[in-house]
Every structure is written in structure tokens, then in C-alpha cells.
Amino acid sequence: MSPDNRLPQFATPAGRRLTPEMVAAFNEAGVLILEGFASAAACDAVRTRALELVDAFDPAEVRSVFSTTDQEQLNDRYFIESGDKIRFFLERDAFDAAGRLRGRKEDCLNKMGHAMHDLDPVFDRFSHGPELAEIASGLGNTSPAIIQSMYIFKPPRIGGEVVCHQDSTYIYTEPESCLGFWFALEDATVENGCMYFIPGQHRGPLKQRNYRVGEFKLKTEVVDTSPWPEHLKVPAEAKKGTLVVFDGRAPHMSGPNRSDRSRHAYTLHVIDRRCHYPAANWLQRSPDLPLRGFVEAA
Ligand code: FE2
Image 1 (cartoon, rainbow, N blue to C red):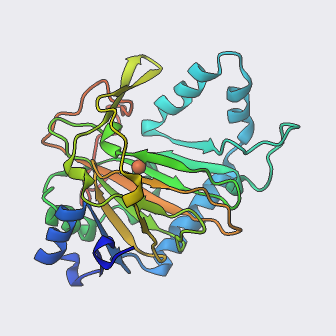
Image 2 (tube, rainbow, N blue to C red):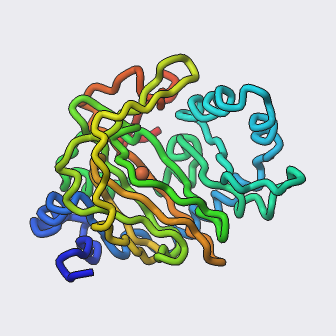
């Protein structure tokens, strides 16, 4: 890897005010890594709370979904209805041949989503505040609304690979406005499945669009079939407390976790509330749970 092929990485600036150099680096690469954004205590608090929620989760309800005859449709329904809920999604290899979970629940989960930031007080605290508003504003979004939160478990040994994609495929607005905020709650390394980005490729087209074609059916339309230049991917290794912020068009991926260590991370996706949010997007929320920005009280 040549030095100029590194992803832009800085210590989190005082007051969370991005410097012109940081903004320029974000615009150039489509991604910006800010070390030391969240304290270890804040990371631990959200991780502890996630494990409490996992403790209360009964995998049998998801197991029954997977064992019904029309698997795909019911599976989609559990996912599609999760935009304003807290739901759990297992890894593909979560069950053994006898249908039993392979290990502790947190070591079999892929993710939890998609509204912890509005429904759980500990997640709410981590997900809001003037510091995050300052980052969004520095990157041009002065009217942010948090559209989703995800807790990514990436468990030891079975944490699955995520293929190259753009988040605006799923979180689409007109004009596009999706920004991803990814927090390392534990050290993320090449060994335990850190993210990779292909810097500069966010200036290309949005290659796929995902949308509803029925109440519980999604379709992914391929607009541009050209392959990603994956040989140019650069790892986004991140120490605990690091924030990785990235453009909705920035292509990224993550490897499998074959190590013995988990790689917990928490993500928020924001849109610009001045943009149109199509009714065909998979993620729809009840009117009882209006969108909030980073500094609006519940
Ligand atoms: Fe993504």
C-alpha cells in the first residue's frame, strides 16, 4: 500500500470542528477516520446495553421464521418491519446441524436494528448531541435526521463477509444525502473483519437501487454493472472509540471474522431532512416515531 493510498485519518479535533484539511480529505476520499471520538466509557456503556438487550432476546422467534415454508417472504417481513423497532438478525452460520445455536447469543448475531437510537435511552444518549451535529454540519448537512441505527456484532469465527456496496443503495433520497457514522466499540483490525473503502470512488455513480416492490418484498435494481476496482481497497482499521464517517456513495465492504475476538461496532445513518425520502425505500417508520436530528429531544 503506498502512503497516498491511505484513508484520511486524524485525531478528533477540539470541539469536533472539522478543519478545512479534514473536509477536503473527506471530499477526496469519500471517508474520514477520526480517532478518539468516543470515550472508552461511552463505548462500554453502549456495548453493555446491547448485551442486555441480547439477553432479553429469544432466538426461538427468529428460528421459527427461518423454518417456515415461505422463508424468504417471512424473512423479508421481519426485516422490513424493523425500521422503527429493535430486532435481531442472526449470522448465516448461527445454528448447528441439530438446529441449536452454536454458542452464546451475542456470538451468533449479525446485527441488531434499526431504531435503538430512538427507543432505548442508553443508545439515545450515545447517538445524539452537539458533537455529532457539528460533524454533520462540517460535511454540509445542517438539517440531519437519523434514519437508522445498527449494532454490528461481527462475532468471532462466524462473523460473515459483507460484499462491496454503497449505503445510498438502501438509504436513498432525492437528491442523495446519506451519511454513515460508524463507531468502533472494540478495536477493528484486518484479522477480525474491519471495513475497507475504495477511496475516491464515491464520485462515480450509484450502481444499485434497492426498493419495495410489494408490502414485504424488496428488489435490488442494478443500474451500472461495471465491477468495483476492489484491488484498490484500503483497510479502515480503527481503535475503540474511533468514528468513521463516510459518504452514502462510498463503496465499502468488510471481511469475515475468522479470529477469536469479536468486532462490535455501532452505526448511524443520517439523511438531510430537506431531501425527498421515497415511500418505496425499505425503511419506513410509524408516524408515532418522527425523525429526529442530533440535538432534538425525544
Ligand atoms: Fe454499508
